[in-house]
Length: 568
Image (cartoon, rainbow, N blue to C red; front, side):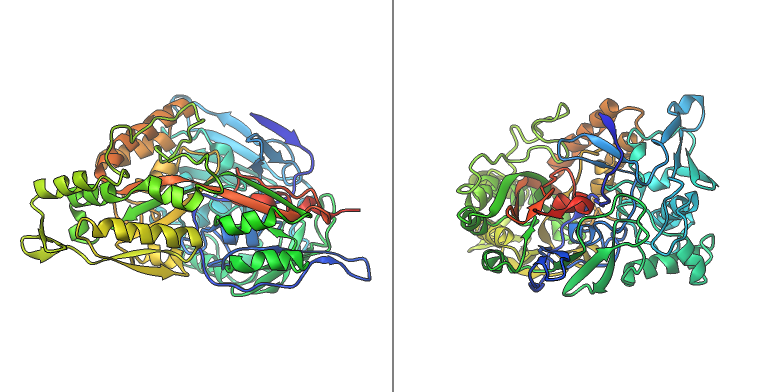
């Protein structure tokens, strides 16, 4: 359902791989002697770049770092309703034609007359056109050197006509998009749209692919001095923190806060003391921590919530490894892994209502949910079955070592980010694989995006963070040409189904194609879902108002950062 709201604070979110790295804690928030309203909000890992469009930048940490900076056209709310951003838009986007049999699928977006960038330059349809080109696959010919992590929606566009504040988008012949309204919203790959005029100011011609690629690289490498939201970044880097203050040229309702400091801190063991001492005001960590949750629940002024989030943990295999190209070996590996043991060890005490994820795209409460693991041995931890699979495929044990034709299988690099949950998980996986004669050497990383894009793993655990959008998921996860298909899976039938899902004329058809793709993917033993990880949020209830979690968005609690305020 869609509804309007006159004033909606800026945010950004995207379907993305979760990146975790080392950081440091920052100073406290509060109201200083001069009456300045200040808040300190922790981001629990390092961001990988200054923008989120790229493979390296596509994380929830980049997205949250940019909260209140990027303008966007709409956003999913905590109650799973969608709201257009009527600060940025002059009117709700208009669907001109939705039947590709009667002509090109087409819609238009008109930006508000008073919408301007922080330097006073007006926002125009050209900003939308250039952002679209920046998000296309280089093979489309618009942007050389760009590496967008989810370009399919952008690549479907045939042409964009700009007339002042309006941009009209037309898809390629025969294509449709049931989620067309999301191209520049808070959940898009960029998290909104960019200021095209800055390319010209830096001497880049946006219609020259090489020069547009230079603009793309600049956006990701340089701290944004610009803003199209209620805040602007005034200080900070990618290693320690960012500091935001009000954007003086923000035309919407003025943000109540004067200053927000966002330190990057991966040391969850410091959260409680920093909170109790007034050094931080809250956080919405991407990683679950039972110890932190239980301690915070005993703190009088801590508002704490825990619920199943939009990030789901999964185990992927790199098919570029010659040994792992054998589907029978992969099936045995996934069968030896005990998902319930992993989930129970991590969440059983603090969140006993956890459920294993048996559908890569749809949750159990979705009308499109199908249990694709019913009757499957994968994820059961059945060592006897895993051994039987290996024996039938010609594998043998030489002592405690699995071999094929006398050659040792492995050892494999088992990688993840260095969080409590994933540390526990990979240690369990290591032990489970040892029972079938496979050595897995654990290697943690503080640069998940870089590690995945460079394919520097054999087996990896990480998470996808999403939103209620789903039509592009199969394409992003498994299409042979997707930049996010890190392990190199390739199946012509899955490619075709993924393309049908993202080009479907309605959501029901898109869901049917997506489930059909999963029917093929599961026996291929490429991705083993574990569960949707519980997310926790905590905030100082004595100090803060209008601060609450949004599990529909990668931005989490920062989705409405322009409405945050100090109590009293």
